[in-house]
Length: 336
Image 1: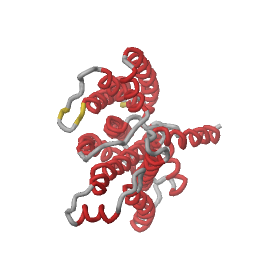
Image 2 (image 1 turned 180 degrees about the vertical axis):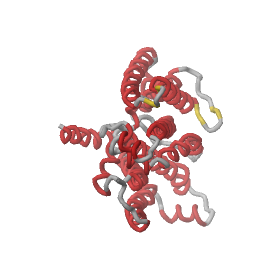
Image 3 (image 1 turned 90 degrees about the vertical axis):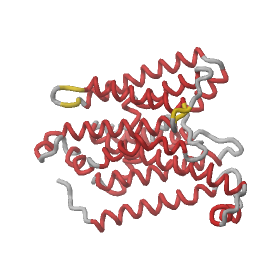
Image 4 (image 1 turned 120 degrees about the vertical axis):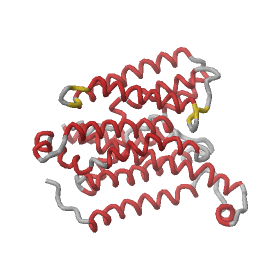
């Protein structure tokens, strides 16, 4: 049974996460390979005195930090929900094969000469990546549909299969393209948050916000579902509806994140486990805390990625893999 969670307890726990994540968020834009003159930045921000330091801060670092925080938070929330619905502690957003579909769309856009175009707020890479993600979501939903609801086992198996098929398609495209395009593909596959301005962030909202809302609205039901489908059903939870909402919401939110940032692994796996260790298993806390911790951690990883090997930058997916890999193995050993 879900324990009583008072407003004071809830806001107290969330405030701790918010303070930590907020500190990382506000400090990160001021740090980087190039040292910014704080006086120039403040003059540009508050006294309408344009200069190079203020432009770097406003149009390069701030949107990049915002994107890192949103993507990290999204992956954390989606991972927390999927681990309950799929009954798998190793589940993360990319296990559904959605990232594979997005990767196929992105590398296809990169490989076709003269294909670059804008469609509203989307570029061709982002648009085709998003289309690939949505194609996989539709395929998973179609395969998993049953007269009695959605089969979570089928989703899991179909997601793994989709990942393998998408991997094969990417290898085929890589074999056919020239070396210059190969470098661009590899860069996207490693994950990246290097955006300029805020237009890319706006393009996330049509899928990200509805997807996250669909997941957050199931927090109470996830608490019941964590004890098993039969027990949740006995307590009045519409199990099939919850599974459907989490699956579709997770798919939409993941598709939005992947289409812009590329496949950044392990955040959705590691963050929910860390939150449960620190704050318990109540998903009314786990979901918002996972968003704050995931956002803070990916922002910190991106700060390391753009400063550790200055003057160049390391794809942030490498940093998350270095951290997430050992954690993944530890979870496997604990389960063993």
